[in-house]
Image (tube, rainbow over the protein chains, first blue to last red):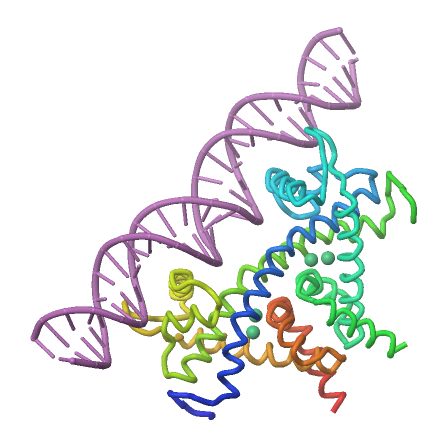
Length: 151
Length: 151
DNA sequence: GTCGAAATTTAGCCACAGCTATATTTCGTG
DNA sequence: CACGAAATATAGCTGTGGCTAAATTTCGAC
Ligand SMILES: [Mn+2]
Ligand SMILES: [Mn+2]
Ligand SMILES: [Mn+2]
Ligand SMILES: [Mn+2]
């Protein structure tokens, strides 16, 4: 139906329309956890590099003001992903560390897949930072399979 | 440096760390426009199907309460992407329609690429809804090139 | 040991994006 | 054409995620 077709009752179109709310809700949910994932992964990096993650370093890496990082850490603590004592460095819980590892690995696979289909490495790194959070387990496995097949 | 290496001065690691704030800021920016992109594309669908986009239909497709859809439309109008008169249907401006077309095409390419690398169609549709907003022009062109090459 | 600089926290602001409840308008039916 | 149901708009709440400015704590230098 190329040019204007006001009233539609095409069952194909209607089915797709019915599925859309769930798609959008899923995307919104993924978005909600995206920030926490990035914080956890990056805090893991800082701990690996410096032995601890200080709020100032977290803020700097995130490109954010210090109080914003403090609030994010509060949310991480509330979610059971991080721990810290006042005026001291931030550390990951077991859950937080496990999440950080999963997120870091997924990030790597996404970048590798983008490069494998012809995206310049630099661009791949930039885009992967957002894409990764919307890659489901099923898609991740497909990516790994594709990369394996390409040797 | 597998097990704990507190103080790091590895220039490779430090370079990557310096680039991170920009990556995160870019991902945040993409996130900010993602919702508007989805609304515009979907409103375009409704107009193509019914000749206009009513707030109730927008809300239903988005999986959101009516007032939330009304607020989103206000932002679209403020951004010059949509127009509407009180108690009447919503329509896209020239800019809005152009954006809708671009977003719809990008969505299609992303789904096709996911399928091409082995993601099940159903999963591809779900994940693409979030992924699409983080696919840059450079990456989109790479995707198109890959799909062309695969015939 | 003191003290000042640096780091951290706290307070308080804003915009966005969701919600429920209420008021208003439109429109089909009788 | 009047009226009630449906659609739309408005008011007002919540939580997130930004920010600046001010208060507090830590820590290194002297
Ligand atoms: Mn990320
Ligand atoms: Mn990442
Ligand atoms: Mn989308
Ligand atoms: Mn889409």
